[in-house]
Amino acid sequence: MVNQILIIDDDTDILTLLKMHLEKKGYQVAVEQSPVKALENINQKTGVVLVDQFMPQMSGIEFIEKIKEKNPDIPVILMTAYGNLEDAVSSMKKGAFHYITKPLNFEELEILIKQALEVSHLKKELTELKSILETEIIAESPSMKQVLETAKKVAPFDTTVLITGESGTGKEMVAKFIHRHSRRKNRPFVAVNCGAIPSDLLESELFGYRKGAFTGAVADKKGLIEEADGGTLFLDEIGELPLELQVKLLRVLQENEIKPLGSAKTKKINVRFITATNRNLEEMIKEGRFREDLYYRINVLPLHIPPLRERKEDILTLASFFIRKYCSKYGLPEKKLSEKARKQLLEYDYPGNVRELENIIERAVLTTDSPQIKELPIYVSKRYTHSDLEPFKKAKEHFEKNYLTKLLESTNYNIYRASKLSGLTRAQIYRMMKKYGLERKQHQIDT
Image (cartoon, rainbow, N blue to C red):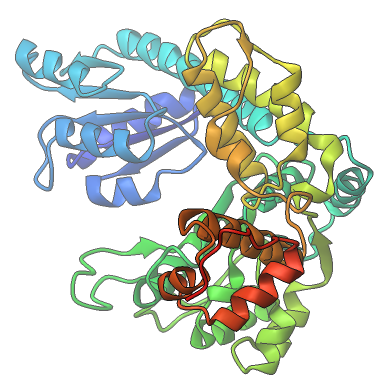
């Protein structure tokens, strides 16, 4: 259980007194004079925060606003010297768990801390439960069951994994599945989309920086790799990583250390790397856009997720899961799929894979008033699937015949007028009429 208490106050005497008292009661206590540094160093071990109201860098209420943006589940107790009711009410509105006045009543403080920790533990358990539900992977198809079986086998080991598959197939879900079945499951899982962060910011986001490393670096900042220390770092869209960062990532994998921007020293890390891509990295290597040595480092264990169109057995089970999910989310009675809707789902091709199926179901849940989803959103049934598409030559013949029929009917089979209207020569029209069996009418005028 998380029992660490973080105390923030610019008065060193109060910090020392509180630390000594609470450690005697069996708590782990961390202290910090700077609220700015405290915000940067808050982690999963932090169970509750005590913060002073009046500090030079920022007020306690400002601190509460910022911590709620970053870590909304951590309870904060505001310490104020004046017992100002207005400050207390304001702090509660900003998200404080409670407040206490100075000079501190230690008995009252211990009761508040105990209550706050109980809330913290409960929220953590709910978050973990939600995470488990969100990372539950539904698999009825043999191909997907094989993927999960392999993932579960390698989860306890710290080998690097490369997950490949089309966009929307659930690569991050599989990465979370591996983390959840690993020895690191109680440590951070940090996901980074390499294609979503501008390349000029990606290095500082991954490796962090030291104060003064560049304009705007007003304080030290941990990078995402360090945030994942002890846990798992998931690098999605690894193929988008610029070549200069590929070199640095390779060194991290080889040496298990990072060097933040502006730092002269390296720092040891303990991170399990899982990467994913929808690109062909081997082709990128041939084109000089991906390093071969990095490829072999991340591809120790490859996992390929098949597209949804190749695992039809999963479609209806996934659809039922998403129906329950969104009916629960929006407070609606649970709905069922009609036979027609089930047929639509099975016949559709899903270019957007599982992500698209989820979107389709969410929309159907929201737009269907009856207990039964009789028909899915029209854009689903109107799209072509592989089974709908016919060979180009046949499709072209259908078009030509329909076009020629309408052309001749609109001109009363006057070949001259049909030629002028269509831009086809009369010889072309005659050949097409013969090809498609469109007989000339006796009253036809050919001038």
